[in-house]
Length: 272
Image 1 (tube, rainbow, N blue to C red):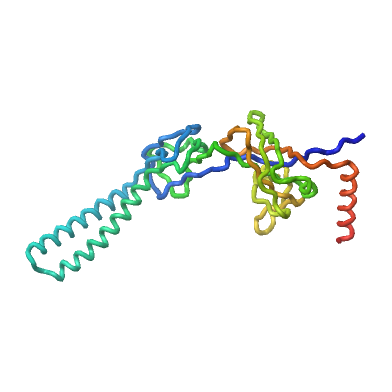
Image 2 (cartoon, helix red, strand yellow):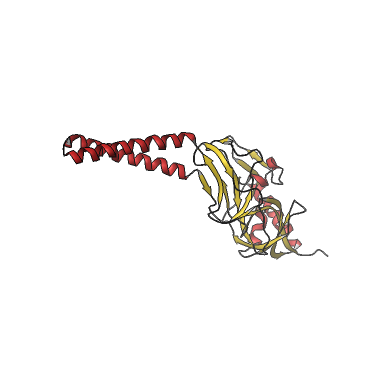
C-alpha cells in the first residue's frame, strides 16, 4: 500500500513585507544616533541627526548676501534714485533667496525620520557620533512587523496541484525562529529559469542549484515557479529567514506520479 501524496515541499524564505533601508540624503557627519537595534519605532520618529559644516557655511554666506542686497535696495528706494541698480539688485536678491531656500532644504534633510512604523535592524556597530558618512552608506533598516511575505520555489512538476489560497506551513532553518502559517496569494503563469532571490540559491548556501551566465544572472538548473504568500498566524520577523515550506496540495496517487515521470522522460527523449 502506497499512500497518496497530500502535500508538497519546496525551498522558501519568509521576510518582512515592508523593509526600508535608510541612507543619508547627503554626505555629512553623524551628530547623534537616536535609536539602536531592536527598537520599536513609529512613523516620524527621529532616527539620526547629521551635521554638515559645508552646508552651514554656505547657508550663512547666502543669508548675509541676501541681507546685504535687501539693505541696498531699501536704501536706494528711500533716496528715490538708482532705479537701474535697484532692478539689478532685486534680480540678484531673487536668485540668492532661491539658493538659500535650497540650502535650507538640504539642511532639513540632515535630520532623518522613520518613514513608517517598524523595528530597527542592521544598524552597524561601527556607526557612532562624529563619524563621517557618504550618501552610499546604509545606516540601518526598518522592518515592519505587521505582515510577513513568503517566497517559495516549488518544482515545475508540482505546480498543477496548487491553487491560490492554498495553506502553507513554513519552517525556518533557524531552530529558534517561529513556525509561520499562512496562505498562497499569487501563482505564476509560467516557470522561470532566472532567479532573482539569491538567498535560496546554492551560491548563498541554499538548496536551489544555479549557474551564473555571462550576464551574471543566476540560472536555475531545474526550472521553478515563484509563489508568493502571506503569513496569517501573527508571528513576526525582523529579517529574512530561509527554510522549507509545506504546501497543502490536491491528492496525487503513486500511479499518477509514475505516469507523469514516464511522460516527462518520453517528452525529453523525443524532443517533442
